[in-house]
Image 1: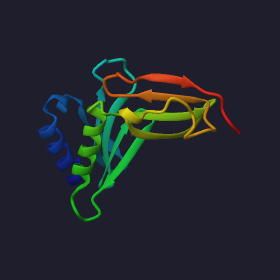
Image 2: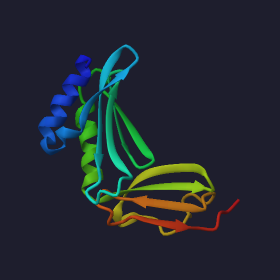
Image 3: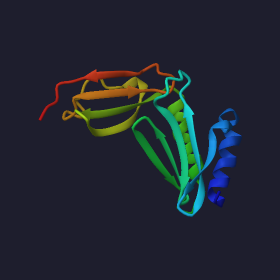
Length: 147
């Protein structure tokens, strides 16, 4: 693995030792990077929490949302990614995805106390999918899309 990926891998395994078994190397162009895919505790297969490194950047994904964390010279990419991971696994937040038909409209991480009940934030959407780490807030909400 490249040096950045090795460093992130070591920090990740130190922070989440029970998830070390999910860490693997993946070839990307001419180098190997870190790839981690952790199943949810309810083990339904989807979604999973993913982390990967590429071009000195950490990307964290959950459901249809992902966020990029880059050092920009201050060596905080892992700390920022860790903060995001902790929000996801805390069950105090859930991922909300909005779609219309088969078209994705957007996704966002929302505090579980503020989860939407309709499409008022995304009126174009006809479906809201909510996913949380432990599945406590999982639901699909069908809506009437506004044009």
